[in-house]
Image 1 (cartoon, one colour):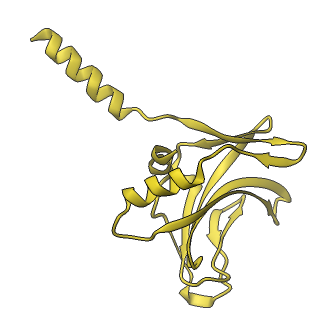
Image 2 (image 1 turned 135 degrees about the horizontal axis):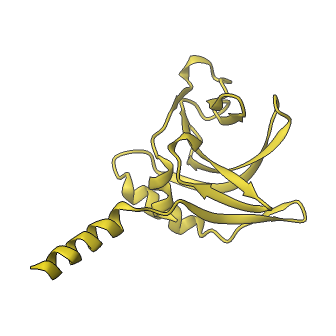
Image 3 (image 1 turned 30 degrees about the vertical axis):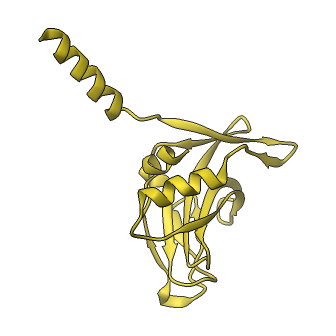
Length: 151
């Protein structure tokens, strides 16, 4: 009986703790280098969310925070017509790009296929550009820990 309880605690414990961070890529000579298998990740994500959006594109990108004048890095996943865009902020640790397990570093912008894109602003976090007006909405449909499961 004691062995059964220990086995149960070890099994439950292994499922309750997830990775804190995952290396996504690195910066080499000013370029983003990653070996992510985009097709596999998208397939896993789409199987996790069978009732919703079908994501078809994944990129690791660089952006400029216009207020802080700093560079930031992020993963962007999009559906086919680009009306749904989800972004995950990456940290740059000595030119190593890391995805940290924090729900505050992800966003989904939905509404139109142009002008409704994720934008990082250092003082406020993620926002969505409103190039298509009020049709653009901000939410979190895929949290970071869930995305990390697809990696």
